[in-house]
Image (tube, rainbow, N blue to C red):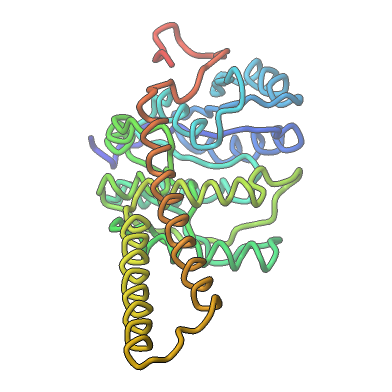
Length: 319
């Protein structure tokens, strides 16, 4: 494909979950940016919102032919919504962006420019994060660095799902079948040429975050388990360390017996039991997470169920 030609089609995928307060402003800013391109589509994915998000999207789609809407039967999660958008997007390049306007749509032309220069993936890399607590900033920073140390995939730090992907990258991504998804790790795994676009992340325009601590912990667990077996290797190392310590206790007891000295009482015994029991429980828990992941994947249930489509042609891909 000739990247220099001007009549390319750009798809923008926007997952929406309880975004009634930002939907109109998000569409206004996206439209203002995208009107400079000859052909584009805005693909909103309603991830089971029960507020007025879907009615607002219906009204937007009724007045704008560039808008397409997917609506799930229930909440399937952010990563499923992004995956659905990628499956239904028809552009030569696809941009993923959240609706909360923390990631500025005004960066899209710069992404397209970098794509024309030969980059298959352009990912936005945060230099500053406005309006977030010290705890959120610190834990996010530590997570990305810990994840890179735990995997063999070069996952760029301080990046989210805000990125541009070439059609070839999207087609390759759609071949990945896993149900528990960590897109910001899956895209680097594909191995296409990628480049960062530094930016400052703004405060959320309105509403509240859809990623509280509980969801963030699950998201982090998905990222680590999906791209690394090092937790299993770590549990093995802990088991070896426990055996070495147990041998040390046995040797100490034998020497004390041969010298006629009383073996110390229950304190070291309880310490040993507690340590070995803890190692065993940790190892079983880590193994259980991987077995649970195998079980979930083996059921082969669909990643999402589309209940409604708006402004799509009759030959749109089936969910």
